[in-house]
Image (cartoon, rainbow, N blue to C red; front, top):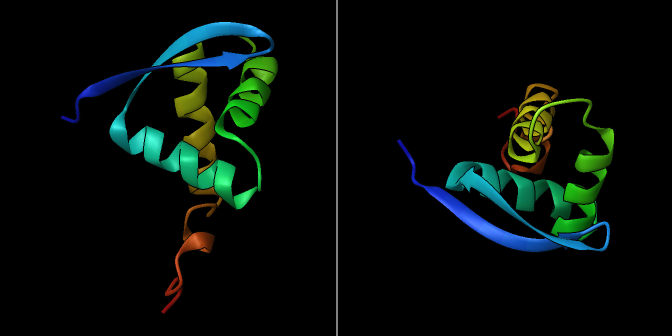
Length: 81
Protein backbone atom coordinates (compact mmCIF):
# COMPACT_ATOMS: atom_id res chain seq x y z
CA UNK A 1 0.00 0.00 0.00
CA UNK A 2 1.38 3.46 -0.92
CA UNK A 3 2.54 5.72 1.88
CA UNK A 4 0.35 8.61 2.91
CA UNK A 5 1.96 11.97 2.15
CA UNK A 6 0.91 15.06 4.08
CA UNK A 7 1.22 18.43 2.33
CA UNK A 8 0.33 21.93 3.44
CA UNK A 9 -1.38 24.50 1.25
CA UNK A 10 -3.52 27.60 1.45
CA UNK A 11 -7.12 27.29 0.35
CA UNK A 12 -9.86 29.85 0.78
CA UNK A 13 -7.38 32.10 2.58
CA UNK A 14 -6.35 29.69 5.30
CA UNK A 15 -3.57 27.16 5.76
CA UNK A 16 -4.52 23.51 5.83
CA UNK A 17 -2.80 20.17 5.50
CA UNK A 18 -4.00 17.33 3.34
CA UNK A 19 -3.01 13.68 3.66
CA UNK A 20 -3.25 11.58 0.49
CA UNK A 21 -1.48 8.58 -0.98
CA UNK A 22 1.03 9.42 -3.75
CA UNK A 23 -1.21 8.12 -6.60
CA UNK A 24 -3.92 10.59 -5.52
CA UNK A 25 -1.42 13.46 -5.41
CA UNK A 26 -0.28 12.49 -8.91
CA UNK A 27 -3.83 12.45 -10.31
CA UNK A 28 -4.71 15.67 -8.50
CA UNK A 29 -1.71 17.42 -10.13
CA UNK A 30 -2.65 15.90 -13.50
CA UNK A 31 -6.24 17.14 -13.25
CA UNK A 32 -5.20 20.65 -12.18
CA UNK A 33 -2.68 20.81 -15.01
CA UNK A 34 -5.20 19.59 -17.58
CA UNK A 35 -7.58 22.35 -16.49
CA UNK A 36 -4.87 25.00 -16.53
CA UNK A 37 -5.13 25.92 -12.89
CA UNK A 38 -3.19 25.59 -9.68
CA UNK A 39 -3.43 22.67 -7.32
CA UNK A 40 -4.75 24.94 -4.59
CA UNK A 41 -7.49 26.30 -6.89
CA UNK A 42 -8.67 22.76 -7.65
CA UNK A 43 -8.58 21.75 -3.98
CA UNK A 44 -10.48 24.93 -3.06
CA UNK A 45 -13.23 24.00 -5.53
CA UNK A 46 -13.44 20.44 -4.16
CA UNK A 47 -13.61 21.85 -0.63
CA UNK A 48 -16.46 24.23 -1.59
CA UNK A 49 -18.46 21.46 -3.26
CA UNK A 50 -18.13 18.76 -0.60
CA UNK A 51 -21.20 18.06 1.42
CA UNK A 52 -19.76 15.99 4.25
CA UNK A 53 -16.67 14.14 5.35
CA UNK A 54 -13.14 15.40 5.47
CA UNK A 55 -11.27 17.12 2.68
CA UNK A 56 -8.93 14.20 1.93
CA UNK A 57 -11.91 11.90 1.41
CA UNK A 58 -13.66 14.48 -0.76
CA UNK A 59 -10.55 14.74 -2.94
CA UNK A 60 -10.36 10.94 -3.33
CA UNK A 61 -14.03 10.72 -4.34
CA UNK A 62 -13.68 13.68 -6.74
CA UNK A 63 -10.68 12.06 -8.44
CA UNK A 64 -12.37 8.67 -8.59
CA UNK A 65 -15.36 10.23 -10.36
CA UNK A 66 -12.98 12.05 -12.74
CA UNK A 67 -11.11 8.83 -13.50
CA UNK A 68 -14.33 6.89 -14.11
CA UNK A 69 -15.46 9.63 -16.50
CA UNK A 70 -12.22 9.11 -18.43
CA UNK A 71 -10.44 12.25 -17.26
CA UNK A 72 -7.00 10.72 -16.92
CA UNK A 73 -7.31 8.69 -20.12
CA UNK A 74 -7.84 11.85 -22.12
CA UNK A 75 -4.37 12.95 -20.99
CA UNK A 76 -2.60 9.82 -22.30
CA UNK A 77 -1.13 10.24 -25.80
CA UNK A 78 -1.93 6.65 -26.73
CA UNK A 79 -5.42 6.53 -25.18
CA UNK A 80 -7.75 4.29 -27.14
CA UNK A 81 -4.94 2.61 -29.07
